[in-house]
Length: 92
Image (cartoon, rainbow, N blue to C red; front, side):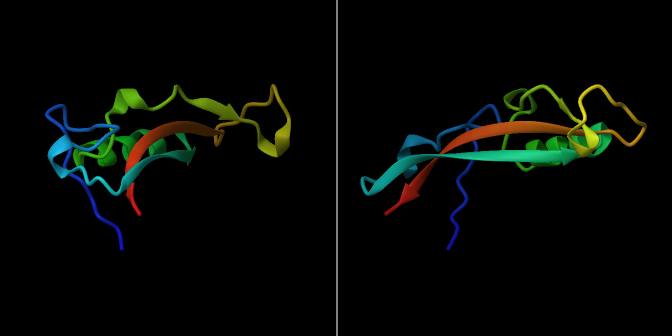
């Protein structure tokens, strides 16, 4: 069902290399959200980069997620969020 495309020469890319392009494909944006501690988010980003999926610089800066929706509160177990938007070629 899912086809994974090879990364470009930088190790990651928003679009797959052109030789694999199919005339019956269309680009579609996919947004990834990671929630968790800064350490967990950093580890996940490094793992995805090691697999050639996304460059660490493609992710947003960490955004604090206030507990219970209360802005201005901080705790040791504070949750954070980062966002990555990728453009993929989808087969029709």
